[in-house]
Length: 326
Image (cartoon, rainbow, N blue to C red; front, side, top):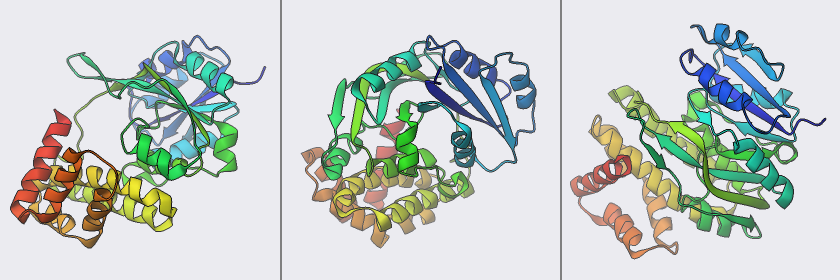
């Protein structure tokens, strides 16, 4: 019987959570799946935990620590499923997730199916992450799709809540970028995917459990600066190759994400935030975003980031970052 779904799980030093994650995948109501755990050079007991799981559907690949993007690409290279899903080793999925998404993909002949996510916090409270949307979208205009669904966060920047047809990935040579270069290979992958999608299905039900932990990216000046620079580089590299109809919609997204990272970085390194805030590229994104059809609130936000005195622009960015985190 054809393998319906290949689930690729990059694992790195996650001995405490990887068993919980993989069991949630193996316990799916859709039985004809394969689970590919890609051990990205773990030096704790992660590999021992993997080898202790007795299920023929689990495949284990090991390589040196090259990063999550490389691990996902390695997993895709050996996948046999008609569809591919990605799960992070510290998360879990609801037992019906793959069956529901597989049925939708087959019924609609979709390139990609996306479900909603639960953000799960240390106190065990859960919050639905995305605005609800149950819809099948035929993509006739890529720029219009990006503007209507990506820039408004209906099409989320994560990859873990998506089921993607393997032939679609192969035909379009879609692969993950170097995690160590961009920090956010999920975002770049979704940006590249925008140029190829022809049919997308959205499911409003939250089937993915996204556990929220303290991140170290902004706990010191060095990491905050590197992340801000990497996010800017990501958009610069994407825009250099993007089709004209995509640039305006993605400029809106770039403005919001870069502003968030400026606000976070400003708390630790005012100089780094200042350099990006006053850069030609960032101002170009803001001006392009102003020409997009968006709410008066967003236009006022972008205008403030362009014309206010610098210290007030920094305060606006910091407030935006704070509101995003609340």
